[in-house]
Amino acid sequence: MVLSENSTVTITAGSMTTVVMDTAGAFAYFTHYLDKSGKITQLNLATSTTNVLTTSTARPDCGVIDRNDAFMYIGFDTTPGKIEKINLTTFTSAGTIVPSIARVRGAVIDNQSSFAYFSSFSTGAVSKINLATFTESGTCGIATTINKAIAIDSTSSNLYLASWSGNNFTRIQLSTFTVTGTATTLYTAWNMSIDRDNGTCFYGDNASVARIQAMNLPTLTSAGTIVTTQTTPSLSHGFAIDNSAFYVNRYATTSTAFCILEQINYNGGTAISASSITLSIHNNSKGAIEPSGTYLYLGGWKQSAICKVQISGAVPVVTAMATGYMTTNTKFWG
Image (cartoon, rainbow, N blue to C red):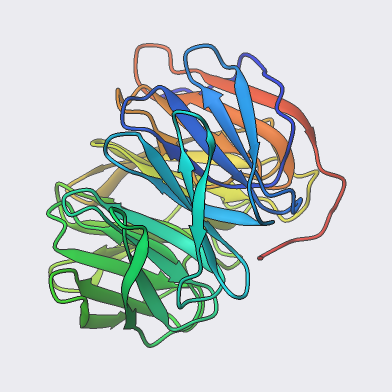
């Protein structure tokens, strides 16, 4: 598959860490972290126009949207932690809560039971939020304190976390909200995605090595390591996955180094080929694929930029929506 770029759109803030897509595929939402603006950009996917909301607090970092596309729930990298509820119809705040965890940097939603789960970058626990009442209904303690990578399996039976430090992988059973298994990872993780058909989790090495680990979820054992074809930039930061391939963003350590987006095709969790493109943005956030499976969206980490990547069809295209990168050359981890 060949990837290329072709157009631009202006946005008003940079430093995006997460993109959240609604279930209808009408809007994508980008959290702006590094510039401390507290902003969230709403991108109309049909018109490429944007709307910006300034939230109650700086450094919104993660988010989820409910199954009715009615509300978005944003976690903030603050101490104490904070979660804000956003009305997507009016694109306004609908309230905030302070969970038991600090530095809320990972989020996942279980739409079968209307609960969301948030991980912490400093507290050894996961917070369970009842979305119907917008209250915390409990926490589950885990062995490691710094966790951002979080996912739920296809049956909403288990939640998984891969630690940013400590090389730990944790399984939490959602029905009892208790830890039911742990494993030692080969690498530290920033984001991860699950191949829902084959029960395999993929996450990248958050160190200066261009490699990806696959974890077999039923057995909590390693399903192998993929050494990617692109070695520079080397940090495997963000992931998105569909039914035939997964996509990894290659994070650049300076605001002037371009990033690599790599596509890795797989069959039953086994990598069978790869292709890549150098993007016109300098740092990438986690990506999201819209419901039709045609486009992947990425936001710039130190840059006021959004990339739209066509990942299906006869002539795949990347739409670069860049408006200039931020002036810092510092490598930020939050």
